Amino acid sequence: MPKAVSSVEAKNRLGSLLGYVADEGDEVIVESHGKPKAVIMSYAAYEQVRELREQRRRADALERLRALQHRVSERNLDLSFDEAEAIAEDLSQEALRRMADRGDIAFERDRP
Image (cartoon, rainbow, N blue to C red; front, top):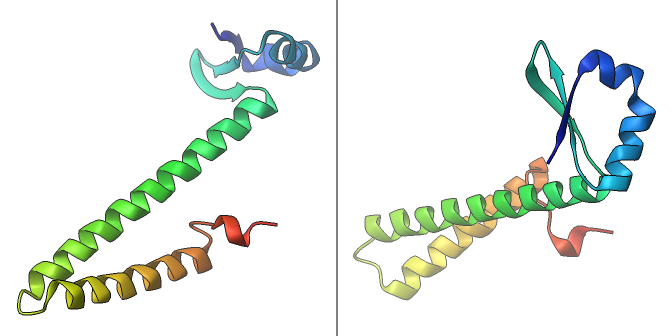
């Protein structure tokens, strides 16, 4: 179970709190005026959180792209399925390129 400390205590005992996080594998919640403000966690746990955020971001992007594909298909009922799918694919690829250019997503092939 995570330990909770005040921000003053965290400031005064940072070294021992880092040791606690490393030894116990648990987090320390830093509170200010009794309200949680930050968490001290192991770097491995932080990396897991980052990876989960990236997975969620990708899932959200895919969901938006699928919705876009559906809207395009609905607007173009006179097109064949293959024609509508090709348009949706083109739009999806363009959206992914824009998101990558903004840094919203990253592809494994682009990572060092």
